[in-house]
Length: 327
Image (cartoon, rainbow, N blue to C red; front, side, top):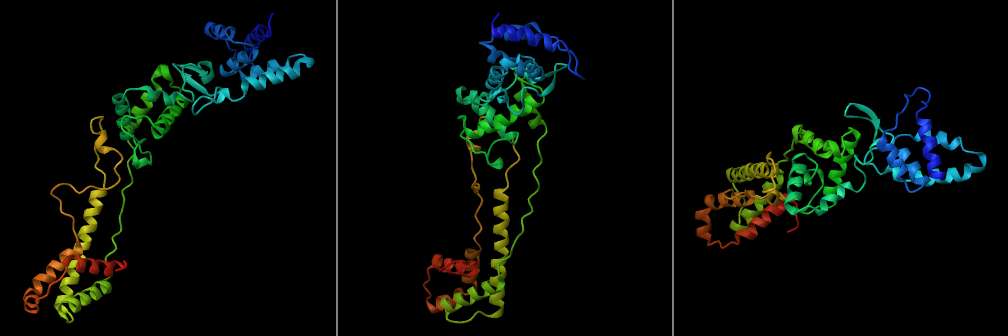
């Protein structure tokens, strides 16, 4: 009898004798066949451990003759080093309920996701990847909202991270490949979206003193005089009102639309992080609108003085003065 055959015979006898507080285990024909296909005793030890029989494996090792303890310990260490931790999010001894049966992940090693399964989608066709990506985005597992940018139709790092998360949760729920575990878990995300907290944006109005000083400078530069009180207030109020409108417009443009992403719209969704002004929407420029009012109020005076101004340069001077930017 080989060492492997000896181990199989002894471990099968042990599992039929329940440990304290445990129920007896009746090995299935499939489990016995898998043990018999092991390459050697180390492989057989690993398989038994993955069946969830780790306590019995330890008991078996303690039952070995003293002169064999060193070689047994080496075989045990070699068999159990690293491989049993390949399951995503769980280990082989994790207890689960599979199709009504209380068992362990290790008892069905081929059914559950292991490290590397999250990479298999790299071989999928681009249109297949797009479909998965669209669902991952709608589930809140992919895209810039969760700091996981992606390339449509290409399976990359952040796609793998999202799938790793799904497969780990599926394993923990006892739903592996045979139960379409990651697909079922993804559907739970899609059916129960997490509501994003409402963002309350604080609006900080421009400094009135800075606006007044800028208006004073504008009148001095263009007309060689100080503004009258009504002119100062009119221009300052115009700037302040339009500054608030510009802020509200920016907030509206940056607020994501609550729409489902599809494989067909994935390219448009992409990884955009900059707001895009829609066609027909005019960007609000507070400085330009204040200058427009200034020109209307002082039109006759400018005509009389023959003022010849660079409007863009003047606009820039006003904005820089108000915002504190260098001129």
